[in-house]
Image 1 (tube, rainbow, N blue to C red):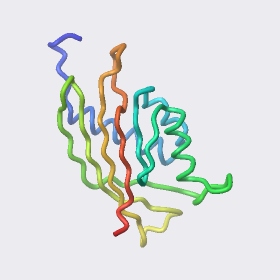
Image 2: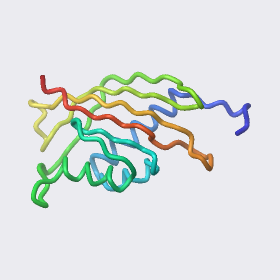
Image 3: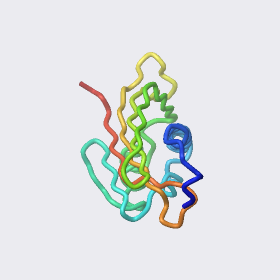
Length: 137
């Protein structure tokens, strides 16, 4: 990688978050493309590894008995902290609200933390670590 092509972690982080939540809200299985085999994902305390298992865990969160738990989902990230990490990685912490079925009056609070790493072949980043929690307390 050319050292003159310095990456701005804030720009990468903000672009990733916008892309991630748009896909999460409209086409969750497409999120698999953001992960690699070593990627770990935790959702509400359940940890899995690899793109296929991550998509399966998301499906279990979004579906029950093969039916969607809700008709629509909209993430509204309100706070985002981004830091550079070792080996050109980027750490992102997000908190915000999720509006389910358009019910703006009763959003769910969530927090999510990502660690992005450069793709081994170059040309972008993948999500190595992803931790999602609803803030229900």
